[in-house]
Structure formats: C-alpha cells, structure tokens
Length: 102
Image 1: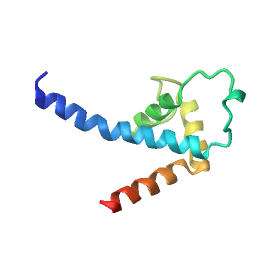
Image 2: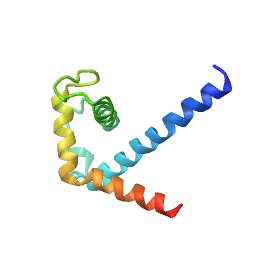
Image 3: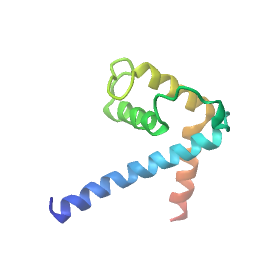
Image 4: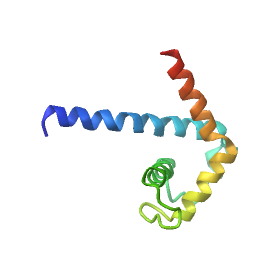
C-alpha cells in the first residue's frame, strides 16, 4: 500500500472511530445500570452493538435480514433502547457543539 492509500484509509476510519467513541461515552453516561457487577452473560461488547447498528443503517438493510455479527432482532432492540435513553440525541448535541466551536 502506498502512502496515499494509507492516508485515505485513515481519513475514512477516523470519523467512524470518533463516532463509536462518542456513542460509547453516551451509553455509559445515560445507561441506568452504572455498576458492572450486575451484568451477567455478556455475549457482545458495546462496540459490537455500535458497529452492527451503523452497518444496518449504512447499508439500508432491514433489521431482520441482518445476520453478520449478531441477530438483527437483537440489534433492533438495542437500537430502540438507546433511542429511549436519548443516546443519539446526546451524541448529536455534543457533535453539534464541537462543530459550532470551529
């Protein structure tokens, strides 16, 4: 890979990694369960959920037809849970503040 391809790949992955980090921070902040002691049988990480949801929304597929990392129904439930918690609104407002600063 030449330098321009590496730069372009990093240029594309940096915003996605920033988005994943922002969503992770918002979920930790807004989640009703603050103590990890109560969590049992964690099959998927938070990053797995975020990547799966981004993948479904980016590719414009239905939740039921998604079957890569995990079941699409599981992703849909997590997505609606985060909507109720206001995770996406929090990420939007935080990103908007950063954008308006520059």
